[in-house]
Amino acid sequence: MPALSALPSTPPSLRERVSAEEWEVRVKLAAAYRLAALFRWTDHIYTHFSARVPGPDEHFLINAFGLMFDEITASNLVKVDVDGTVIDDPLGLGINQAGYVIHSAIHRARPDLQAVLHTHTRDGAAVSAQREGLLPISQHALAYYSRVVYHAYEGVALDLDEQQRLVANLGQSNILILRNHGLLTAGISVEHAFRELHGLERACNIQVAAQAGGNDGLLPASPAAIAKVHEQSKRFSDGLGEGIQRHWDALVRQLERGGRDYAQ
Image 1: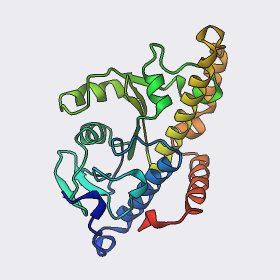
Image 2: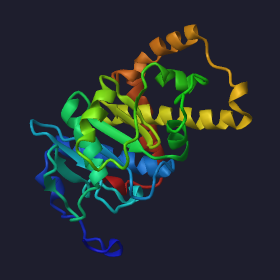
Image 3: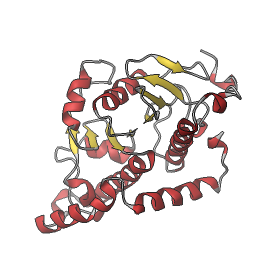
Image 4: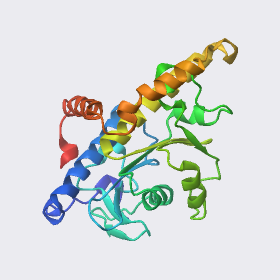
């Protein structure tokens, strides 16, 4: 593996070697990585976002192991299949095994989900370690409270036999809290998965802040309010509403005020 201080350049012909549809997904996934860096959702080099490559093959894109999120570009993403065979690794760095175990399991079991995003943020991990998990104490949380599911911690996700339990716990949801670990959202597009993660991270921020005064003083929403917001949130939870694109477009504008090198 080359030293990270002297990474080789990505082949200039990569864009020419992939379809226009794959390149579009690469650019969006790279943008998601850069936005996560901008929002300080990173855990050095140890978390991972992925997106399915359009087409009949069960291939997905994921970060090269060893790169920080603010180093990710469309060209240096690694293409791998669900069995772990590396199809294209422009930098020769390989991928994180835990990332492979988690993401390949979901891409194999849920072909309806095109993108899977996983974080180890401070507040997301804090909520994952709480017995009651996500609490219905904020408008942000109510958008997820009726949809969130949980997967028990089994150690660092390096063992393939954990995959069956992970996908069983995920079921037909796309919002998963990995106990004692972090958050995971998935979607029918990168834009959808990121919208889900953005709101879920915010819900966890609010919960941890509210708990600073002690859990006894927390005011849960009523069952009627929980049910109402569950219905209201369907405008983005299915990934089909125009709000998803508006949300993503605003994020990209924010990102590109600092440059557009992620799209290289």
